[in-house]
Image (cartoon, rainbow, N blue to C red; front, side, top):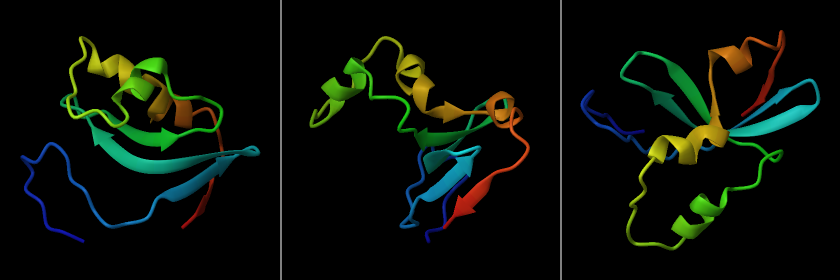
Length: 93
């Protein structure tokens, strides 16, 4: 694990993903996002969603230019509202 500065925008660690399940549906947690507002989102890969065409175009690209980066991550974010819908979760780590 590495020590990071609170000013870092992206922190990468060597930790493996967590596998998260609720009511028979599983997701892979690959990150945690803390927004300027203080809101927190899990960043997940969800087998229910295929990557968007915009995300697929970025694979292998050396540049990242998009008019709306928020939109690219929408399908990969799980916030309080989503998590509040379920009473129980299982985590495999």
